[in-house]
Image (cartoon, rainbow over all chains, first blue to last red; front, side):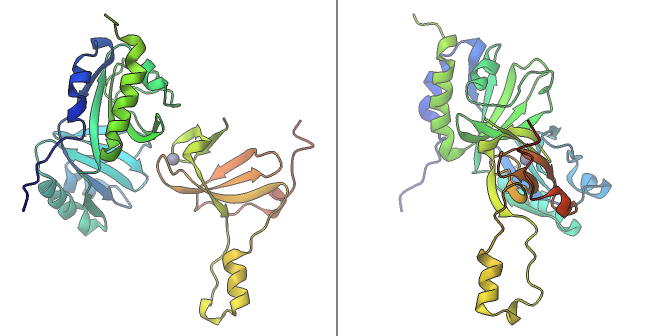
Length: 192
Length: 103
Ligand SMILES: [Zn+2]
């Protein structure tokens, strides 16, 4: 049987990203473990079981250990971890929420993360996203599930200055979105 | 482009949403006892009023939740949105267009 090598969907774009100026920096986040959590009611029990207070305000995220807990719906969250394997994270979260009537599903392969940093990334995002990303309303801890250049994404604000965002995109859309972002960033890059 | 206010996410562009047909169509109490014609009426027959209509919508490109909306089919104006567990709108709120009075 042929050996299956794991390759990152954006490997072919890494040189193009490296050439970008700091004002529109794009870096590919390493693979992380992600688990989709369904849970009807969030209380002290859930916090204790998961080690994080799941955010109940729509369109927000909070740091959770080495990863994040992102609100996806009134009964749905995305938990990530950079230190656990997908199997470990799924097993730990499942053990926590199952007694509370919840469920946990490994979705690590579903999305990959891109980090957009720099003074002009908000202008780049604005070319294909209708959400108001001004830090006045989209500061650190804000999130949004929406479309960016018509691709479904989860945006996570990392700073209160509007110059640091994580974009979670479905792996199969990553190449398309990478091309779209490079095109959108073109006017902020130097041409010599 | 029109904005639709998702009860969870707030105003978003209408391309993020999908239409789900008439709201508050009750599931038959005794589905097994229905004749083919009655079943067809439950599955396929829907109101088609000119004016305010209670509809199901899904925020498909966002939080992916279903919710209900009262929309005026003559003006396409969304009069209000409400959650699935909110009460059904009263008959007085529905089925008359505000087209002539809203100007
Ligand atoms: Zn929504």
